[in-house]
Image (cartoon, each protein chain N blue to C red):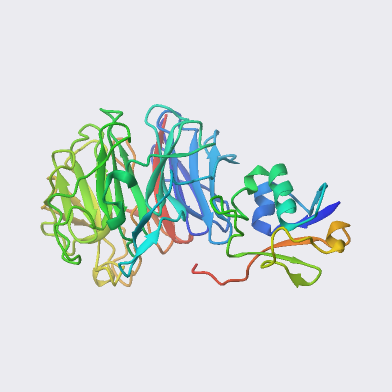
Length: 100
Length: 371
């Protein structure tokens, strides 16, 4: 069981009060987590990864186990603590200032 | 008694302002989608309970929201805006080719007859259409592909398609405008397009009368006379009497002909409204006095409307999608400012008062006149 924590704006969008729990068959990677997440919550499609390129949106970050995994290969296996649910996979809206 | 619903898009959410036909007391709901930029929201003329909203942030990109109960509840619908084929390039600010990249939806224009059909004007400039209630979107790629696309370049706010006008007398005719490419028209429901910029003069570009490259800020029409168009260009207020084939300047005695909004009185096709802004580097009213200017002669002769508007120390802007009119008698006129005020006039502009004063910066204002 994988535990995923969404940023506040996307919890409101998906009407999720707490973390999301996902079952994933096969390798647990960023891509498999995001695919499973978007399959359950289609409204998230395009909010984390660009529709056209499939790339992580620039101001979205993936943290877990006190590491920033944002720049890792999306098909690289994630730490066992994520795969076992001991630690959550954190999706973060980057602290990136803003114009308004 | 008739009612009025104003749909306000702001930097940090959407607000709905509702009143009876007297337009004196207003109920305010919101913020809807708090914290997100709402560039535009608009109701279907065919079903006033059907609303569409463009919701975006720099973090999580673009969403489209739809309501089927007049804005009480919303559901996210399709947000996949993929350019048709290989998008190619347009000009970047430095003149180099730059790939077309989707950034956001600036304007949503519901069909005049079908609540499930809606057009989306987007940045980088393109026009999309949905015929299934905004679940899926297809680009009308004849616009980008008609030939001049590689010469288009962004205005200061980005290369946005911000205006979509549907001709009530001819379902195949659509007008659009792009900053900073100009105005375009299709006569075959979006399959093919042509630039309609003859008569525009922009001294800021290398060829002032070029076929494309003009920074059109807004176009307006009166539904009873859709071949007559009015334009607020970056500089100059313009008019066309032949569906955009030719334009002539009608700035007349305006204190400055820079501005963003332009609109037409609901019952008087020759009565126009603009909000003059001092200049393109000082996006605020001249002398800090906020004034709407009205022409009752189709342009050239303008009168300032100031009663109820701040006449000192006012340094707000009124953005291109932030003015609208209702169709009551007398016509109501509404506009929003970057300072968060929404001003209303229930007497065609003679007197103004703020409905709200402290919203986030207002990006768009639309009005629904309800039975």
